[in-house]
Length: 86
Image 1 (cartoon, helix red, strand yellow):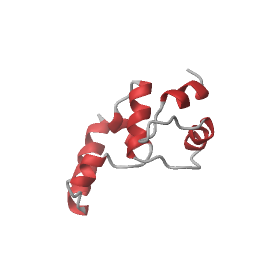
Image 2: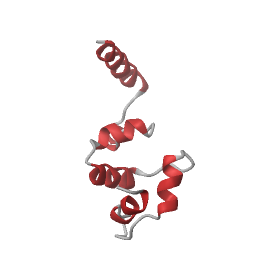
Image 3: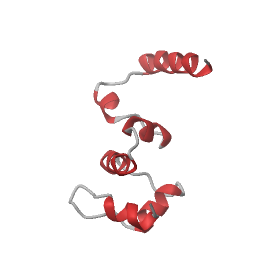
């Protein structure tokens, strides 16, 4: 799928497609998409939204909503690193 096609298929909250330039800026790390756009991109690309949030350097929104305190996130990251080493 081309960048232009992906942009046309990825809708903002108002139902309008994102621009190819916006998508290009996301890919080049010049802009950070919000949760809605990341979820829309994940859907179009048939990717797991959590993975896309992590790739984008963001916590998944449900984790943020539950109140991810520093100590809990430390334990989660330690568990992640242990599992990742395997």
